[in-house]
Image 1 (cartoon, rainbow over the protein chains, first blue to last red):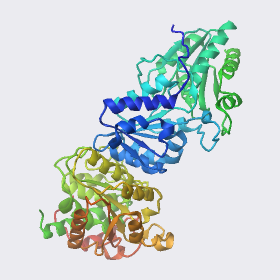
Image 2 (image 1 turned 90 degrees about the vertical axis):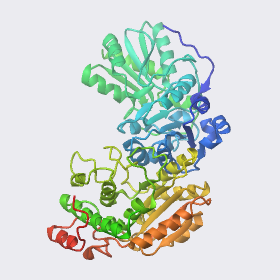
Image 3 (image 1 turned 60 degrees about the vertical axis):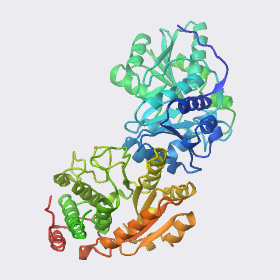
Image 4 (image 1 turned 180 degrees about the vertical axis):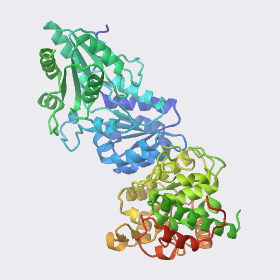
Length: 317
Length: 281
């Protein structure tokens, strides 16, 4: 198996910006919208190169979602940009009626998801967005793990017809997936093979899962690490294949355990292959101000928390 | 071009369709539908340029978005009689497995409908997006939208109103069904909206009023005037003064029939006031 190494820390939102730059050059139907957060979403190059295809809507996210829905009528592929909190909870009914129920080809691109947004605190740190979005019929939900994967996902969703929620983050984190890795919507990636436990991670927790697997190996525990970047539709087959081998699973995500990836995995296991599972996720709580590292530590969202969860689940096998 | 008599016949027949649709399922929204009948007939038969057939992108034709989706009966009747789908399908309004949902949707693939509406306040944003797409596509056709006056209590409208003026979306004509009524009573009692004309103008729109919104000739004249004001750097707002429940005497001038269907006797009275002209579906 590939041994993943950090190619240099970078933020996933810059992966989005780089993906948009490329789409601006390759797909004339792609248009971008933003609600007063151009710098945060890293789309200045797209704007400079395609000013006529950029719509600054101001601090008016509900209007942005409606305009995006309307732009699809006429063949455009709109990418909306704001923080994850304002991309989902604030505009849930607009997304539900004008985008999801109407079946519009809108890409809802959401930065600063989770506690790693940091010092701004809980008003801006949404930990419920995966649940909100995966519950919408027809919505594809994607949470890439690093810069390269976010860039690849951004480019890939332009080719897919239908509404998509693309979730990424603020801090610079390890960039470890191959720069040329093809992004297949709905396809899990097996990052590291193992036999004792399956760790299924998404977003920023994938790198932490790899570190945890390395540490566990030193203890004689063989952990398999699966990267789920597409939470919906979920790669049931990849999950089942792994847990049938290992017999237990730890899920890891920067999200509330209610409504997140872990619950989606539980549904597969409960209906097809009942298996002990532990959740690395926030415990039905809001976040708070702090540095990303401090918050990941306090809310149990790092490699240490994953290792502890592995020990707990192994005792239940 | 249809003659005025042909259009008047369509208005009468549409009113019959509305009454019969809501009566059959004992639900739906006749009040606003009846109030906007002349507007819909004028829009689809005199004002808008539409292509034969239906495709979602609507390039090369004018587009219409219904934001106040609860007046689906008038929308469905006019779409059917324009030829988007068979008039017999009006029989399926609000029934299970129908394309004619209580509120309009694209989800069941009904030709003529380009967005779901019902949850209020969202249609103007969608219409702006479609208007922006037309500009990108160098398509000089117009985008029309209709909104309830009570619907303007939803804040998203004002985001959209601010955006459209600020960004010179001048290929958009948004009409407000100005009947002064909403579910709980008169708009002035439920939540007064003040001077709507002044509000739209203050936001930078070109506003015109159609005082006789249930007079077909006045509606056509007013909407022609609205068309002539497009392309001049401002979005255009039409304040269409209508009477909720127009054409059925006991439904007029009250909010009581906003979302209530007539019983058998009331249907008979309503139909007796609106002669069958083009054949009931």
